Length: 242
Image (cartoon, rainbow, N blue to C red; front, side, top):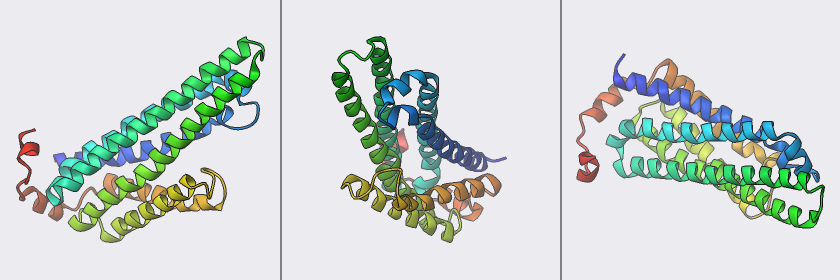
């Protein structure tokens, strides 16, 4: 099995793991993010919340992994865009990590609230609301806005290079555009993230990532496109020297 085939399989697996851990993390966080009794529920379900944080840490690793795996494959077809995708993917991971810190801080606050027997409850709720807001902001900027930008970049290069069937790449471009629209609606307060019919705008990109993952695992990248890309010299001497 050649290096490009191995890279395709690994990237496909990481796409699946990224989607799975993102969904699991969101679901496991629910006790501390929803309902008026979130401070009480968070402490009572601390193990579940910590598992959610671990899922999101796995999401961070797999998100970075997809970018690292794709970079050498995409680089011959658009070095600046490929490098931009790599950098923005790291930025997405940083934003998600800030959200993890916010949730774990909220969990500590929840435990302190329970230990204090609800004394000075208003101060705890003010701090809790702030930490929830930080998480909700990061969940909009990372898994929505930056995800949309990242997907636009690598899907464009997949379309340009024909590394995968063009209809699949077009699906990625469409899904990325829709999730960016959804992110803007959330940002301007038109809809609430995770609720309402507007969430359907985030479904195409999730479906695209699964179909792309299956394609990469089952068939890999188009061999003729890979061969063409391998014959092209890199244009950036700084990247060449790395």
